[in-house]
Length: 169
Image 1 (cartoon, rainbow, N blue to C red):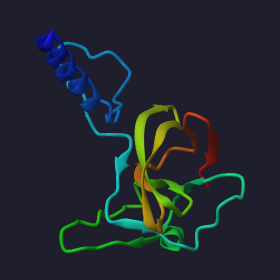
Image 2 (cartoon, rainbow, N blue to C red):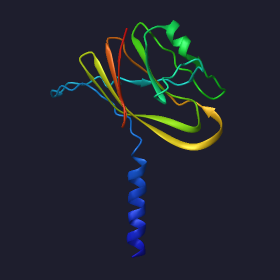
Image 3 (spheres, helix red, strand yellow):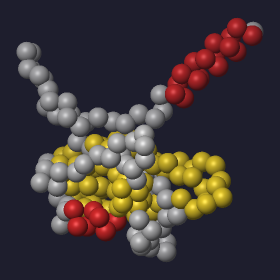
Image 4 (spheres, rainbow, N blue to C red):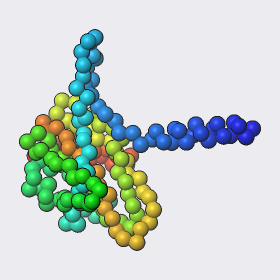
């Protein structure tokens, strides 16, 4: 009986460790024999930034979806969070736009995970999940920041409870 319980526990732990997966979407067309696929990700996460406290939130929502297409607007919403150990990713706005999912500042830590993304023509679907963690003595903002192809004209953000559509301007 003890061995079955141990085996069950190990299998359950392995399954739980596979939950945090970011979907990498590639071409939906079938591959012909001898042909290779460019495995470039549609959504590439950006590191080394924080959401400025000037970001305004709607009173009815604890989060905000943003799509930025130029450096001036990017600098309005985000600052560089350089430390001794991290690397700040650069954005090439000639080739990319930037998407952001931001949570309202709170005393509970929040982590935003990308679950799935799909590009159909010039429309992008982003599915994500916000996980709440431990209580803090300070207010913090959750942030998921990533680049997307410049040719995307509309982004549909979808979480378990909400859907938001942002037209790229």
